Image (cartoon, rainbow, N blue to C red; front, side, top):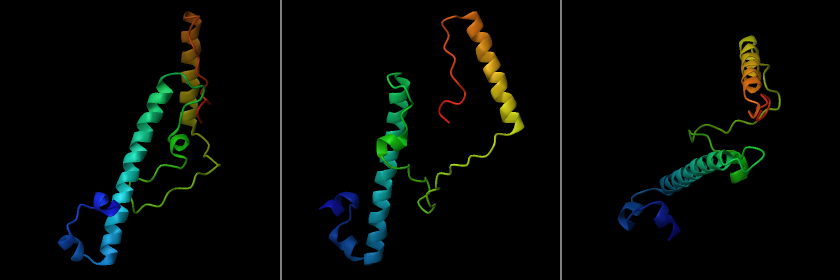
Amino acid sequence: MAVRRLLPLTARAFGRHTPREVEEMIDGAIWRLAQAQDARAWQTALLMSATGNYKEPITVEQLLGRPPLPLDPRQKPVAETEDAPEPSEKAARARALLAAAQMEAASHDPGATIVPLDQGE
């Protein structure tokens, strides 16, 4: 009965496929369901983080308990690496300009909140 919900095949159409084809169709249906779950988790994480009720932003990994699936089913998941590349000189300059702009804005508005640039990295 569960297969019938994943693949709306009639008995005749089911019989025309090899077991490998049926297995691939089931795997594809499961992958599509997992992708839909990832999309809902991404949306939920954004909404939860936007409320301001959490000290740290909520991530998709926290909600799912696993990293999100790649968008291409043939692509293998990329392992997270601890060694992030050093930012380029252009990126460092942009970060410095952003920090200066935030400090300038805060000097004009005493109630302004300055967000540290390293937060979320």
